[in-house]
Amino acid sequence: MNAPLPSRMLAVRLERWASQPVLTEVDVPAPGPDEVLLRVDAAGLCHSDLHVIDGAAGVLPYELPFTLGHEVAGTVVATGRGVADDWTGAPVAVHGIWSCGECRACLRGRDNYCLRLAGGPIGGGLGYDGGLAEYVLVPSTRHLVQTMGLSPVDVAPLTDGGLTALHAVGAHRHLAEGGTVLLVGAGGLGHLALQLIAATPGARVVVVDNRAAARDLALRLGAHGVAATVAEGARLLATLGLGSGVDLVLDFVGAPATLADVPHVLAPGGTVAVIGSAGGALEAAKGRGLPPGWRFDAPFWGPHADLEAIIALAATGHIQAETTTYALEDALTAYDDLRAGRVAGRAVVVPHELPSRL
Ligand SMILES: [Zn+2]
Ligand SMILES: [Zn+2]
Image 1 (cartoon, rainbow, N blue to C red):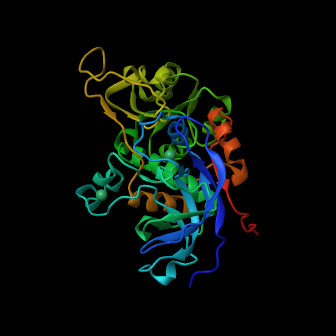
Image 2: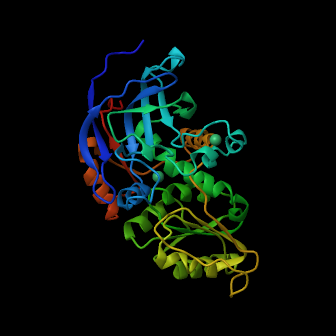
Image 3: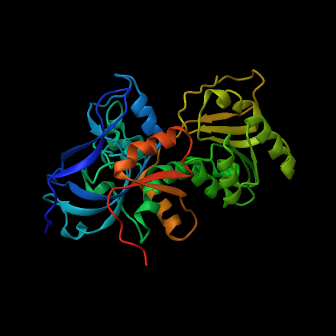
């Protein structure tokens, strides 16, 4: 049974490349076969939204216009033919990579690297209509995850920020255990990755961020030290009793100013994982003064199974997103704040008034 819904809604739409998104009214979509309509309870803003907004025409393989917002928590309010009735009313998180479920990557649980998504839209907010709206259509219940009693504001940042952090950290946990970690950028993703690293046995972690507020947040979340530059961070790590050289660099910024320096602070066999996309580059080569056995990794988001895992970690109190909430009407201000580095943790848009927590 589908309850009556409004016919129009507010949405934050990207209508032209390299220009500001607009808050406008659009139709509330009706779910077709296998589709579900969610009331959006919370939608996180991501730095990658800014790269999408700023991109020149032809850079991204998406057609305009579409609604932004790829970190979504909501409630199923309508379902299409073929969807089991018991989904209606379920609080859910959306896995933002709308993978095919059938290619060899998907069949091996590497659905974040789905072969059929290469060169086209990825999911809601990234080529398809996303969650910066009152409602969002999701093509299949395959992309939904139960939220285990967490509030939607806590859940939304886990769907990209938390999931990406878990995927990036998980691949290199063996280096973090009993090792040294330099984490660059304690923003929306970095502050979640820090909690995962801080809980890793024997890991020593120093956080590099040029914002004092982000460094304070990092110290509160378990960093053993903080620094304003990569070189200073590497020196600080060397004084923490494990010898010099960094076993694992997690760069959540990827800026030109820091990325080029990063391989030079690695210990032999160390790894640089770059998650942020702020336009930096580094030269990969053997020799050239770089340590033997160094590796480079560019992980992307994370698979469905890791979204279930990060939500379970949050539900058991092992990780929590720091959030700043905004009304949907203030979403463009939220983007301005994100661009200016004024957001503590993750900016989360709450399109409807949430039932107050007693
Ligand atoms: Zn993102
Ligand atoms: Zn696939």
